[in-house]
Image (cartoon, rainbow, N blue to C red; front, side):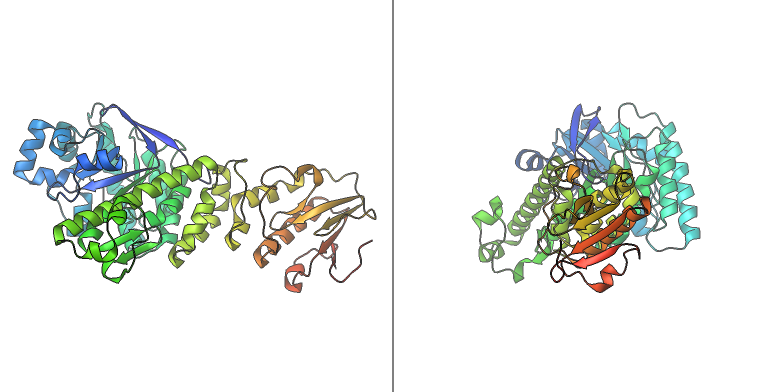
Length: 485
């Protein structure tokens, strides 16, 4: 694990496969063959995909073929297949002509490996009354799904509640209390489309607080690689992407920093097979159908590469460094990362206590869970034998009982802990203001836990506004101007 991100395994018994998570589910429209499921499996390594059972159910030819041959043969895919229920169409068009019982039975009959009930995808920013009423309907349908006979088919329990954190938390808690298997955080597509990543983080965090730690969490409709790292750090395990095909249809080229229009590119900033075979002019000059296919292949390559990058970052324990890098690519992602750090209590409880070296990569690093955990544990330090303590950015002094390092953002670091994670952090030579503020917070906490100890802080030209937050009983000296004995 790293932050709330984790490497997991989702066992899908009906497909007889186990999926490593985080995982990307390409969306397959059964009426449009941009990139075939067989090619997704053989060329991109897709282990799981998602298609819409409502579309199949509503097309007589597809319906009869799926019932006769089974979904895996219909799509020519040997991995796991999740099916949506038509809830997206409900949100788009206002009504659908199937019930939860009917669509779950149909999903089971065609051989879906993971089925979905017809929940109510309540959009963002509606009235609380509407969100609460529609949540009740969704919860009723989850109970219907829980009671249904679905054999080895896993069934999802969508978590709704609009943009009301308490409703999302309750929805997560009640969904987890069912016997259902996978927990999609639903109705976030409008937030994704408007780049409201901070609101998405708040929705996910609230949902996660209601769910159990072992709940597989699917962020429904999250298909852009620019936000995979952030969503994984918030605890999402599954992502589904129709964006690779939809963007390709509009000549849009995906990157981990955002999306570019092909007409505006002079160079292709990627080394995937498509971008290695074509330059920008060559890709533009392809016939429309071929260009759409090649752009979709590029978009898939970028997306699957980012999933692998996220997995590796979790393994190494540097996922938050990857999130910080991605956050510098777009202001909305930066807002999302800051929103994640504001869920400090929940995030710190999930974050491992030891991992790879902490890199202070941005101002936001000062508010990472590792810093909070260290500050919270300062009162465990035994200062009973000390009368005078120096906390210094300069050399130790024999005028004090002990000299501790001053390391923003962690603050006071006793010699015995100086080589313990996260105090082995790689820190900038010139701390920023936020790191110094967090260090002052830590010193204040230390003083509160041991008020009888005389503490002196030796700093290198810290701003007066930062030092003003030190307790009145703590002395501060500037070692760039004052002589230290």
